[in-house]
Image (cartoon, helix red, strand yellow):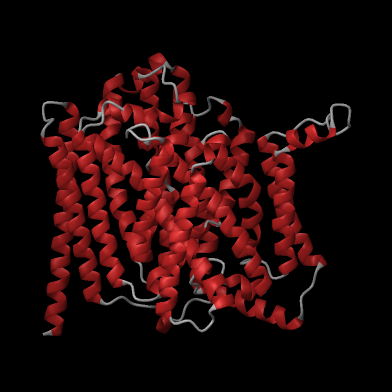
Length: 574
């Protein structure tokens, strides 16, 4: 892309170096497996909530949802808002249960609930699902970066994968969550800058309505069909609540109240921020009506409207979005490999230090595997379609036992296995019905059956998975001793945590973390100020300068707050 200049690359590299420094700091801070995979259970809830938002967010939003906004308009808001109901349900139903379970990984409880074999079966199949899902995210980041750097797609994917893997390996969950918070600030600032620039360039919403009036409706296009929205919303409801990174954010905080706040904060952010990401592609429809690849709408309008330096910050923000989601996924997947498979089967007596390094090795292997897989995803119909296909086949059958196992006492290990195999098998038949028909020839009765739509296939898979899990709980029975374990575990989930067992963080460590955040906020703000300084004669330069100045002021206020806390602590100690 011709609009990318040396200054943009320089800004991008400075940002990566800044993030590396944060990761190395937490690499020193983390000493064992608990710290690496659950942050010692003391991650502050605002940090965990923002991290959860960023872990669900990725360049996928800038690619897939931007394409929907470009094609169909504001209906993209309805599609993105599918993330809000899962967070509300989590706050009401699941958050306190996950925190009371006192886990190191999301699937750890399955051994108590269903047995050792079920835990291993679910761990392996769940890892397969997470790998497929994250391959699509990695592909999305490669797709957009390949338009702005002079490299081939596979080269971009490889370099991006290595960078993301490095950041995840060095610092564990503390680094992931704090980096997510910083990257949230960069993402928000860049999006807030592009939002008014996009509207200004097209004459506001009135300008969009004049050129493409149908795009100003929430109910325009095929994705506004009620059946499609119902299927997508229900699918995401299951997928997000069973997302391992989401669950990890709910049990990495101090107590149940903090876990609920994580979910509520996530819901608020998912509802409030999508307009920032939908309007620029809408404006691109007016400014760039003949864009060859509609999924590149956000990248294209960024390159058109942002001057050098600020475009580099936008690229950093978009890269950060996927880096955040993949950092979280790599960490939680490595946790399952380390704690639920490696430790449980091969090294039950391993020391915490041994398991910490095993986790880092598994993180590297996961990162390399996903990176290589992303090089193959282009033949699956693009980022949105590939993600939708993987989710409809595997995510629902895996989500049902993971979530319903926290609520129901009857289903057994057979219920879990039958649900996963039966649900995934049915989903594959429904989604690949046209291929199956070709095996029988034109004259067979199979060829005469119409292939179900994606909506019908998805809703059928959801209903069948829930039915299999619930009905099998009444058909198959477990031993009295196993049922007693299940009853004790589910009773534990109904019992508030003992205040004596709630972890606390060293006040001095808290001060150091706040100071670190202050330094990063000031550094990021100054990067925006510096990138804008050469463009003060442009509207974009003025907006960028204001945003950078505000970020710097916030960083100074955070630092002053840390100073006051530190002075108060020193007064107590003296």
